[in-house]
Image 1: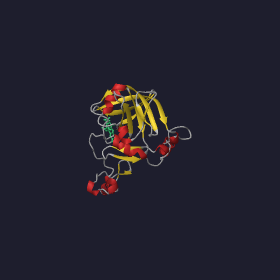
Image 2: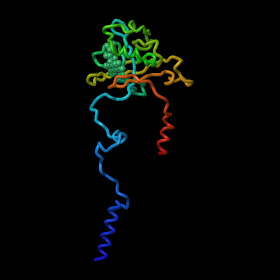
Image 3: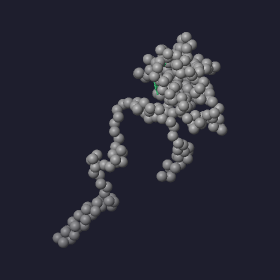
Image 4: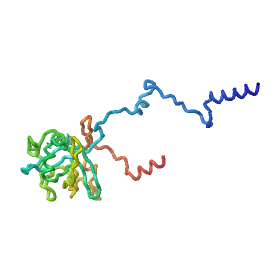
Length: 235
Ligand SMILES: Cc1cc2nc3c(=O)[nH]c(=O)nc-3n(C[C@H](O)[C@H](O)[C@H](O)COP(=O)(O)O)c2cc1C
């Protein structure tokens, strides 16, 4: 009887201390109510935002094209990206309603023009009016240059320009994906690094935030990818 009481006592003590089965202190598995969380803890809870295009950030590209009458046009596009390394290709996704959409189908070519921060107002304007109604080169004073490689104009004042030949279109729904093979990249010497590649700190590109519809500059250098990867391995 006494031995039984001692055994039950020891079990009760172990249980009270949270030591059970695997010999470790049991974790408190109680999920705290939202009202019990401090601000930092609340932020770890993910909130569903729905099926939207709020991918933060996106690049800001200006797409150059000619219409049937050789009128040069430009439009801003942020639904964009690199799409293949070999052949070097990129994509821009445009609504059929844009003037540029018909131009690219017609001429099978387009350019991508990347602006420095100082040209942000131009990229904003070019993304708000249509070449169907105005000649955006005339209204902005930007200079169209005829590409020698593809049937599309590029913007002289923008420091980084990519000349593309249309290779594929993919109908996605509201947007058509235009895939262009990169025939050449042209850059102002002033934005090149010593190794001859575009230098982000010299180019000073900016990005777009879908949802809040703002442009932001690029922040400070975080590190090169191989060094950062090594750092993570140590942790
Ligand atoms: C930052 C920004 C990004 C945009 N991205 C796209 C895009 O990727 N696809 C699209 O169809 N329209 C986009 N637009 C809207 C077009 O640029 C706009 O409809 C433009 O007037 C079309 O010009 P166009 O009719 O001369 O081709 C964007 C506008 C802004 C301001």
